Length: 215
Image 1 (cartoon, rainbow, N blue to C red):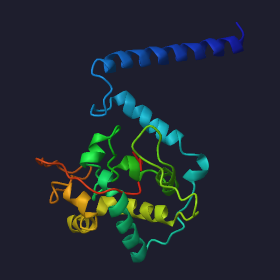
Image 2 (image 1 turned 30 degrees about the vertical axis):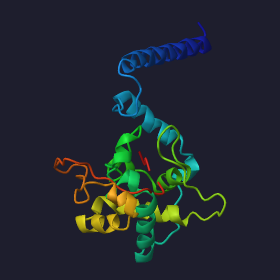
Image 3 (image 1 turned 90 degrees about the vertical axis):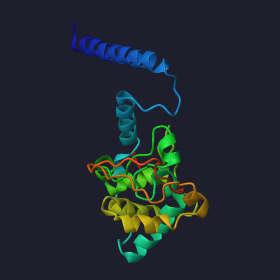
Image 4 (image 1 turned 120 degrees about the vertical axis):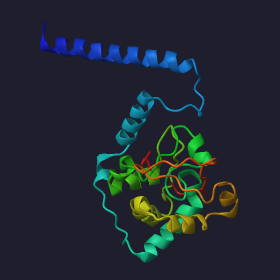
């Protein structure tokens, strides 16, 4: 048997295994349907993360943020986030909102390491281009060519893990009135990753924003 034939058979074996695993997953998933309210399985979560990473070109990973991280940038980013992003991602970045929790897959907790470990360029690319087969839209500025808003949001996302309750409340107060009224639990704050969990009768909601998985 030649080496080429051996590699071909090995590849076919791997493909067959993938098909079998996918078939088993489909059968078990079909029993409960494919509604958006179902919690993603471990397989789906793994695939989604792989797809997210694969969707980001190598050139984007090495991009550096050209926007200065100062008080003016942060103020502008907060206003933009409150108006466009928080309805899905929540004022504190937890993703615990009526919309963020209902889309499939759910909005990620952007304070978590899985988002914070992304490079600035990767987060920027996700904001600008969105992620296919998820609720994350692309907010790119193809017509104007001005991407400053997205880069400002990258700075804000980096700060989310350190936001205090007062900072979250201040950002929440900047949200559109309709979105703020839809929150329900305006005084509730979702626990940060690794923090002790506190149960609330109603999840925190938030307004709509510019858009990262980093999901």
